[in-house]
Length: 287
Image 1 (cartoon, rainbow, N blue to C red):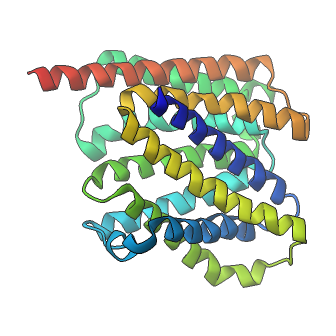
Image 2 (tube, rainbow, N blue to C red):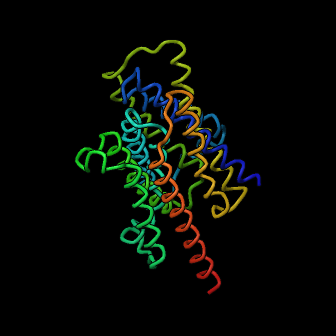
Image 3 (cartoon, helix red, strand yellow):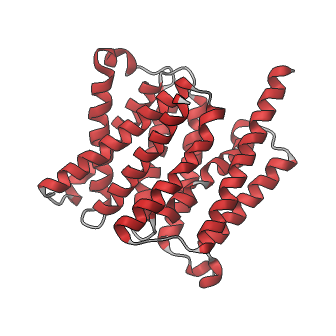
């Protein structure tokens, strides 16, 4: 139960981060908002590591950590570009494609075998994505740029998750330090050309974005230490509740019936794929 509660807190933190970034993007550049997310997260991560910083900053797989960091930074930047023009609940729903894409990409990248039932889950998930996008409104050529950015972000995030699977010997805090620091360094090099001086209140929001991101990752680490991933992972879909609530309260956005239907298909297929993978692992262990 404690693991589940920490996972629910994780999703609240991540949607809070998304909400802050969407709001800040109304006044500041994409680079500046992305910079704040990583820069302040790096400070918080370093403070959490404390005296163990020197040990935690060393990785057993620095190359893979660098690739992870690049993928997460790219995911964040592209996602930020997408939520500028897309309702938060719709953006969150599209990002639910990531676990489905992980299953699909694990075939060529990890050499995993996917059975007929999981293939069916993948097809249902992508059907849900098509429904959310609603191409019949204007044709596939008329799909909004924001939605296209979010589809790319989901693909990048899936690759990020796959590379994360390959980094098994590092402490989770090491991974957090690498991703936050890499993003902070890269964006700090270019942010001066995109800088607009924030108001005092907006400084608090920029700091809050880094705080929400760092705390979200720390909550996730805590959740996975208190309960198996098979128990807590399905609760990641609770983020749609927060995204819908925040989107309605702040921007007056309420998902239409097509979005709810697509979300149901994507979430259902994601849970089914997760269930099949868990059974596959259980059978392999018993064998």
